[in-house]
Image (cartoon, rainbow, N blue to C red; front, side):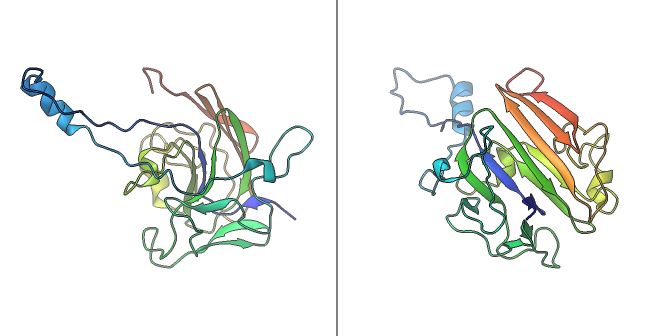
Length: 231
């Protein structure tokens, strides 16, 4: 049975960021007005720390230590972003994780949203296969932080998944940086070697000590480095 991802927004949760909240100042220790205004503008985040997480020891591991995150039959280990259950539009279809379209556009799918494999990885290589229907748009996010009231894309870099020929987003952005395997809206995938809609593509994301590499159909197409001045 082919263990592949069809239209999957698979999220790997990895890093943390801190909540920002200021303490109460006395009159003697009051900050200048400009500094006080800056502090007042800092948002306070509520991380959704009570959501279920995955016990990775219960997932099969091969001789090379690779862990199978999807068993080809069930969504065991998966749930929705910022929720404890699986959104109804995510199902298993012919050995693949499948998102069914609503006919109401990308923002109109009732009980859709992002699907999360809820385990915090550090250094990793994530491999999957995917195909899309005509005109489809999806993606794989890494380092998602589940924050109350905040969409996943605010915190998470995205490996773009797209029908480059038929979806208009492929023509937007800059230098093709919204096409398949790109770091969405930031760095274009080069070479652009995705296969047409209806055909299977192979993808991989490598993360090692802040260096991220996107692969598409066995070629490295994007590289970037977290926490650098350029980033």
